[in-house]
Length: 296
Image: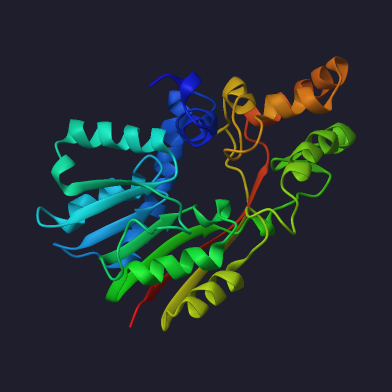
């Protein structure tokens, strides 16, 4: 599949998320494996069940769920991206598991193609951050689940880290050039207004409320907050850093720099930032939530 004809979701997940660098892609996936495993542990999948993976993306959770449902079970790969579903279908064919897979092009808030009480488990990973109608999505999850069906989700709580202090840029201390950094950051701030953009307009309390209002009676949530210095020496390649984008609707860092700065300003900004990126001199600030619930 040519990168030039992919939709924004496929372009980001398969290319722009990691700057088109295979090593960065591998590192990104390795960082996501524990998330995948925790989502599936919370889901308590057993053999013979039907798992619906909403917003399946590249199939990270869905393919792992196939091993848990076994030969008698089924996994539904659901996504709004036709290109990502094609990608997953091709992988399923290569793995010889097509007979246990169903591919559904649908939005999280509109699963009308699935009948009521038709699946045992619903999983998501970093999906609701792109959904405006989050409450409706939870209602759909509840509707398609069988009695005693389980919901297991993972969502970044981006409100925690949006937006950084003006002295920081992507966790790097940039006080001497913070005026330039703020110009670049403003590109993203305009794109993701805190009060209205689905990426940042909710927190873990909202997730609990959405689940309870949808009808789930047994709900658990685990919030993980982290503010830690980066591990020195584990820096990123500068070019892949520049070519990476934080989400499917955002410009790459280089595109944001080009939008915000003059040529001379961009050169000054890059000259200062590059050694910080390459030597991983910075900090990580993040908050994520795991929520799992049962339909009684």
